[in-house]
Every structure is written in structure tokens, then in C-alpha cells.
Length: 401
Ligand code: GLU
Image 1 (cartoon, rainbow, N blue to C red):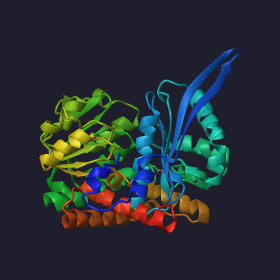
Image 2 (image 1 turned 135 degrees about the vertical axis):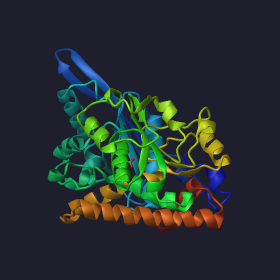
Image 3 (image 1 turned 45 degrees about the vertical axis):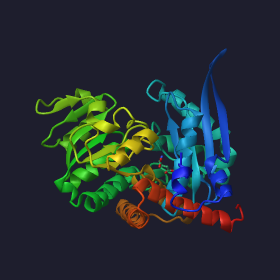
Image 4 (image 1 turned 60 degrees about the vertical axis):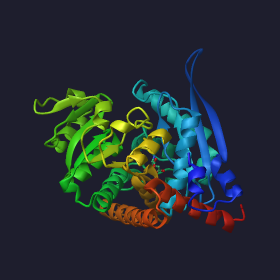
């Protein structure tokens, strides 16, 4: 949640704008029912939140997780509003979710569930009022199923490239994280990424491509984890081999190399590294561990990895945090290119996608950095000053305030 109390120390925010940005415009709870046999029905909960659509249609991923809630979906939709505004994209903030564990259902059940979800959302998908994309637990082939229901390539992004998806979209969030890490490393630590030590928590889509791009740049990644735990080596991990191993559907805890130390996810966060990249779930940096963090720079590759209490403590410790709405924006930036191509019929290469992400992320980083100096704000507040200014200007133009 945006802390308007804090932001108002830096800028004037009329009450009307605060009211509009403090609550979602629309929230829907779905009961997604699947008849699986005579007298047998499975009912799954789904949530759709449109937070603010002053800049354009609601854009944001669809999350699949057993314990996902409406409140979590709401927070994620709010982040999308600010992420799109900060990146100058013509999208509002949205998010949706289905409460199920993707690992525990059959392929048939998963496909039926997604088809039913798309069917229930058909009007919003057809008019382009909400444009989903992958998020935690969902994949490009899930997006292909949604596309199969709508038949409009611009109704969903993150599709596989041969089905109107964008080459480079899969790697996009990790690409943006690695670019922002490189810029932040130069500006905050005064060095190149190849001369630092990095720990990455999470090895899903975001964590794995972040690791891969940073490793390519020569970074020493000393720790990497997935849900099963992590690996640590002060000398740097053999990232290519570990990522190949994970690609085969294996867990990091099964990786055998006697030169590497096995560590728990909690311990990874507290390692003596210069840069920490939480790239897994939210709320991993809390008041309980914030004081034990050694990193000087935290790059929020996950959405919402830092609780407000931890944020406070880390700020006092002068740890620089590059906020999620800037750090992980590469995904939605690439989604924008995919959506634009779907409308125009244009095609672009992965290299062009990477260049577009880099230029968007680098220029947003520069703007945020300028504001940190000009207003003496931390990176999170500076990013929100920019997104809220953009949203307020659009609200004025549309006579909303
Ligand atoms: N789920 C991603 C995010 O949180 C991407 C959203 C999108 O591309 O619409 O930013």
C-alpha cells in the first residue's frame, strides 16, 4: 500500500486523488465451478481487482497459488497501477488470481479451470478492459489457453511466441531486474556488478533469468535458492549448471556438489553480500530479520518482499532498496510491446525487446535517482512521487479530480 502520509511530506496530494488511489475501483470474487463427475463438483475461488484505470485498461498478471486471497490480489493490483504509471505505459493496474496449488491438480483440471476462468471473464477480456499475463504459478501455455477462449491476440500477454507471444517476454522481468541492478550498483555502490557479491532468493521465472543475465555480465552470484532451500559458495556458484539442473524440473536441494554449502532460505537473506535480490514471494524481509541483513543494496525483484516495518528498519540502517515497481517492471514493459504488436501486426525480436526494456528501465531509474537527490527521498518514495504525479495529471485531464 502506498503510504500517503509519507508521500505528502514530499508533494501535494489533493484529498480526492488520495481517495481514488487508496481503494480499488472494482473487485470481484468468483466461484469457479468444475463438474468433474456425476454428483461431483470442485469449486475454486478466483479474485479480480481493478485498482485504478485512469491511464488505460487494467493490466496485470494472474496468480495461481493455494493460499492467495482477495487482499493479496488487491495489493498486487495497486502495485500494477504504480508500475505502469512509473514506466509511462498506457495501462491501469489490475490483478487476478485463482486459489489452487498448480502442483496438485492434473493437467486436465488445470486447463478446465483456466478455461472456466476465461469464460467467466469473457466480457472484460473481449473488450480489453482487463489484460492478464503470467504471474506466480501461471505460465505462457496458460496464457495460450486464455487466448484460445478469446481469439483476440491483444486480450492476453505472455503467450508463447508462436501463438502471438513476444520473443523475449519470458525473460523480460529478469532482464529488467539485471539492468536495474547494474545501474543501481554503479550509482549506489560505485562499482560494476562483476565486482560485487549477490544473493538471489527464488529461482522461478524471475529469479532464474535474473541470475542468468547477471551471471552473463560477470556478477559473482554467491547464493541462489528455490522453495526447497539454497546453495552458497563465497567463491560464486556455477550458475549455468544449476539453472540447467532446475530446467529439468529438479529442486535445488537435490543438486550435488560438495564444494557448495546448503543453506535455508531465511539464512540466504542474511548472508554477507553486497546485493540481495528477493525474487520469490512477498513479505520475506520483516521486522524479525531486517536488522540482520548485511546487504547494502536490495533489489525487489518480487512484488512486495519488504514489509513496511522492515522498510523502516532498513532505511534507518541506510540500506538502499530499489522498489518492486521499478525493479521488476521489465515484465509489464514487454507485455506492452506484445499488446502493441498484437494490435498492429508488427513483429519484434528478443533483442529488440531487451533493448526496449533496458531503455525504459534505465530512464525510469535515472528519473527516480534524480528525485532521490533533489527531494532527499529514498528510492521507494521517489518512485511513488513520480507514479502519483503521473496518475494525478491523468486524473486532472479526465476531470476525475
Ligand atoms: N505479473 C507481472 C508483474 O507483476 C507482469 C504483469 C503483466 O505483464 O501484465 O509485473
